[in-house]
Amino acid sequence: MTQARTAAGHANAAARELAGAPRYAAYAAAQAAAVAHVAAHELGAAAYAIKAVRAAAPKGESEVAGRRECQWQREQLPEAIRELVLDDQRLRNDICWYVFDC
Image 1: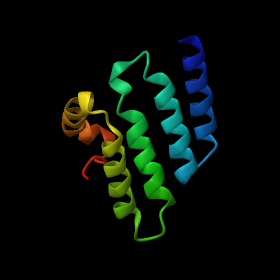
Image 2: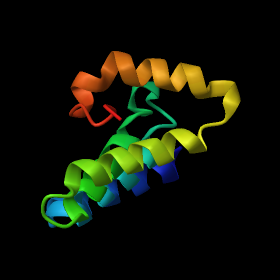
Image 3: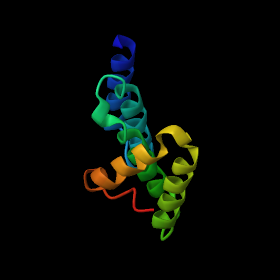
Image 4: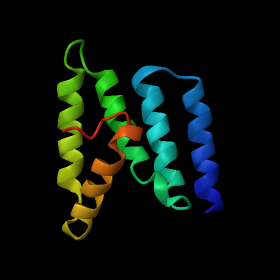
């Protein structure tokens, strides 16, 4: 856990120096590392990854790119937890910048 928290701290520190897609990607990495000790963070990495894809998309294509990323993520969910994650996305979409509207 100590190594995971340290990795999350480094990724968050790197994010501060960045902008746009690289910044969101660094935050996604930080959230992925932090999730082990704070269960409420489980959607953070996915949400930041969607924001990174949106920011990296060509002008006018960010929403479509974000929806595709969201759908791709959902396809990766194991069947055993799929409904649990989708329900959590519905419940907490508002605090995740509404990125799970896909």
